Length: 438
Image 1: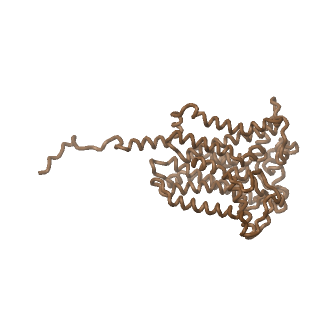
Image 2: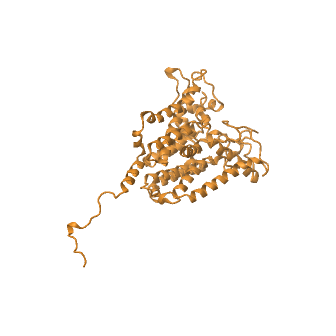
């Protein structure tokens, strides 16, 4: 005989609270989404580490520049002489603001055949409105270098914060270690020396500052628009950072949408559509304007063998030599330099590759093989419910920052042969992923 039915009040009901084992998962998720709060559990000296590293980022450049009377009577490099020259009307403020926007970085009219087409009005304005000097007796050049150092330290802090959001951790020690290691790797990278100390290279760190600001999906879309316009007005190389901005923005948004162990790439993409549109639209307007005014590339007559001895190469000759030049820049980004660290290279410092038997071609071949192997590894690696989507996205993020080296790939005309300043943007990926690996 079947047992009599239970009274309605005695029927079993579903538990209201979390089931056994679920409470820890919810708590883990809450900690993972708010890793900054975990710093409160650290000792005071550990919480002070980011501040100490920030001081180091300033001191490592300031200390050498304050020796041997470099504050009141510094010596300028060749490019600095042109920028801070008393004859530079755009910097000195003796020209109109209209002239700043129609002239190139060196004060020549953009439409002139003698212009290198480096349109950087915002960078020029930072020199124009920050003359320095004053009651301290500091020289203008030292003050401009000091401003570069402050911008670089700020950029290092922003990159370190980006790394903790790209790789969130519930463990406060892992969170702090990643932030500190990323900042150290970025601010102490040897290729940054030329860009920071040489004030003429300010456009490159200003452009990167705007890019790192844009990747944060939590900032207002209005701020994203302003940052992109500022970047476009800072340096023409900013345009090559847009793929990295979009992919990093997507990866960061996917982390914000992370629920438990579920990776929601589709949800992240939907939320970022307005930002994608803004970035693509402003990029198109910029490129369309440069094309309409015929200022996209350097005139042939200004390409000098002393600065770029390979610019006339064609066919297989061009592919081989520029593949090696690209591998040198990638090596610089990864702290591996087959030539030796130097801020710039002149005529005949790198001999031409004349055949496939040249051992230097092992550089680009090794890099290509490494990229393929990492891609295959990402296809085989699965994370939670997201499958291969998350590791593949992180792989694309890393590659997109290395793709900022496109100007030295041989596909576009550039006046520079090899230079550390070109590498700075790509070191963002090195600092973040090497910090994570360590």
